[in-house]
Image 1: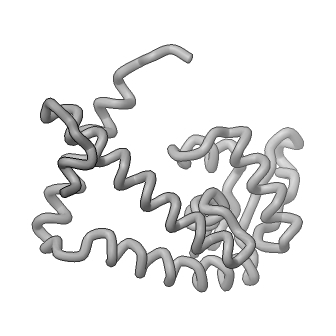
Image 2: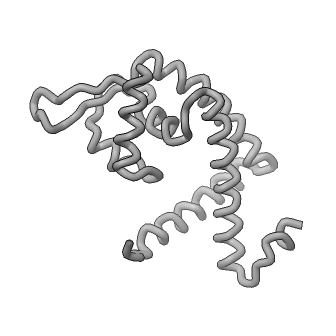
Image 3: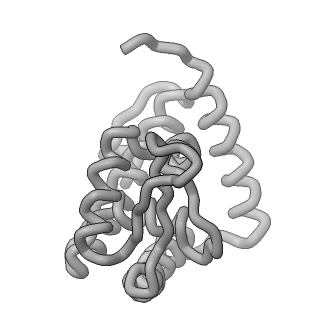
Length: 155
């Protein structure tokens, strides 16, 4: 039934469109879960990178490590999370241009609540997959991700 709905002709297109559709549906559901708590999925991504860290991280490093969001988006998200009290941001005393951020206790609590729901969504998404299947799919998706990073289409 799904193949008929997608009506795809070649195997490359089947893999990419099916993966993109699954990701789109996943993001839609994740955004709904996040919105119920007053957060966005982008907020969750930033909180996940800060979660459990004892030390501060500079904003530039965060931007380099978060693949799914642009630098401008991360700046807006961190501004919002600072206002909500979920992260603390301060000027680096060694370099006034650099901003250091750290998740707060309230941020850890908010992340923990929502991460539990996202984990349930993840479990539902891969229901029926064995551990070996998940590892194989992850390996395959890493290859696609690497290939897409190397495509080099100019903006």
